[in-house]
Length: 580
Image (cartoon, rainbow, N blue to C red; front, side):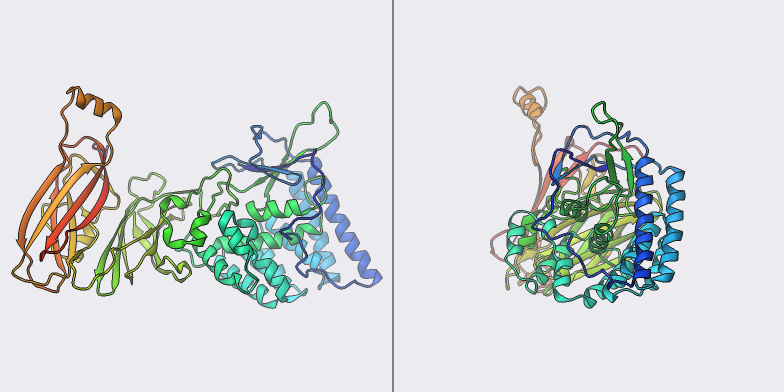
């Protein structure tokens, strides 16, 4: 549950550094006297509806737990993880909205170019669950080109038509004056720490590259045709403009604090009221509720300034103190995918293999899902290449080719019927390429090692979709070597499996000889190097049955041609046999 409420003890905020509530050129020229009466009547009807709504709101049963996670001006915002639909809307409010929409339509027929009227029509049609009608009204808009395009983008975003919304917002930006466009593209309120300081030093033109990087790193899913977090941002700006000059369910004047909170966490779609207290029995204390569940898609601030430093922990989707959040309409949950990703060298490029397994995730019920592997240079995340599959199996593997350099990798799966999403995002760092030196690929774990693959094409169909392995089942390990020069030389291999950490209770038991100390698994062998200058493939089976459950590191050491040894490693989690 995401909620916000008025802090009655705080003064009215009339200005802020963000400028979030500044006008975006949506005002119409002052109409003639008769037209003014039409506009005033429409505004009066809108105010009457909001008063009616406020008086008939259901009582809040969710509670605030006495928390205030974020305080902005007069407002207190708190976040509870999970999915919560909020209180149902009373029928009398829905009926009153229908009456308001009829009056706004009549006013629009008399003032077809009025920006305020067309904006309120789009606002309330979307709120009423009629985005198609909002789309029609926005397309018939006769106000300024930028405002009409923004309203169209808003309605398209509400309908989850993100690619079309992105195009509409692009048209809105193109039609704006430069100062207006700079305000719309400003992401200051979404930034923290060093990233914010770096961004604030840039002028409007210089900020474009930073903004492109920000949106690429914060994109919820590459498997969708557009960045819906970015269209959500512009939709929020559109909503700010619609609310800035109109009445709102909260019994308070609009201020920049409301604009900032809306820009960071989204607009409210449900409202309730607190039960009156003994000290203020006549007052109405409104609580707003944003869509849920909502997630923090923006990575750690350091990633925005140095993307090639990122790892998976830099995308923490459930930070209670997050600077911003977004609740995608297509996601009841966003979980960690936990794939196996391995890089294999192909000349000056990398073959990236991403295998995933959602068959044991009960949230994913369909036999086929949408999946994607997105790859970009870590230093230029805005140039991602996306390999998608709209009919992937719940256990599958995707491959892509990219330059041999640190790569931002995003592996994603989506069950659209169940509105479930899983993803993993991190930077993969291949070993530095050195001419004339032997190098080794990542280790790729595969199933059914009774027959060993002789190439990546053989190994790929059996690639494991996670790094969790059962003790009872042998697992195959596949790798490649590059740069072998002497066909007659001998190559020495050493493979060890050692525990990453041992629980203190077991260490104590081993010292007391209550349990046997488990020695690491070790295999060592030599063989001829084979054909020089080619890709040399090798595979073997590893038995984990003698090891207790826990995390282990597989290290493969290769020594050839008298060169220093090279090592490839993979950390796995050994588990007990799971129920089928």
